[in-house]
Image 1 (cartoon, helix red, strand yellow):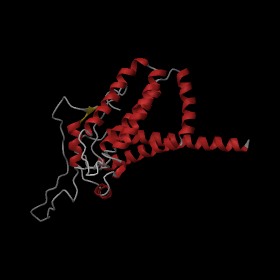
Image 2 (tube, one colour; image 1 turned 60 degrees about the vertical axis):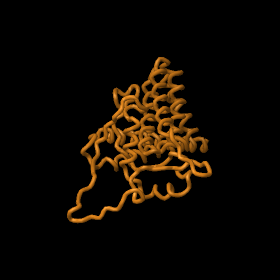
Image 3 (cartoon, helix red, strand yellow; image 1 turned 90 degrees about the vertical axis):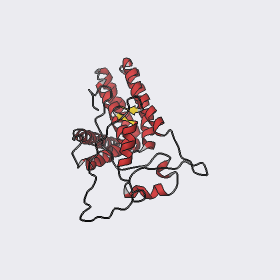
Length: 260
């Protein structure tokens, strides 16, 4: 009896921690989304915090999947009886948001894992709740899959056929030194990026040309330079570079009224 009570208490703590991380991730994402699209120089710290919390939430969910799945089934079972499909829509929108964040950070391995999970969640949602929403969410899924395929269309191989991780970001290795003098005080602080083609791969409002320009105009983090110089499979595989945070415009997904 004591052991059962102890297990229930542990499960309760896991659920409470999950709810805390979920609520914190929502607050940070909403705050990031509401930042001005340009003219605001403090966005990078917000973006980094948002990514850290979403990553922590995702890892926590994987580590405690059995407990959370059990509690989640009970929760959504009540939602079915109460006819609350909006709860599942929130879950799908969470995955879409996290994919956007990982895309801009170019965490492509994590993006692929999230896409697989999103596909499973969409199937569960449309089977249980709203079959007529299948087409709309399938389009979202096809969009992100097409974007990933286009992003990795060209692969550079080493002599031993292993893919090489390339980064076009600014770094001391790719940027010539600029000597600071009293007459040389200019510095690049803000950039406004506009897509130039309408018929191209995109995920929501993020077009491929804008995505590549964002990746090029950001500086390479110091801690990310060393693994990229080393083994060609650094960062967990090809196209899994982990650049600094990029500017994130508002992204729309089904049920979000233009923004997720």
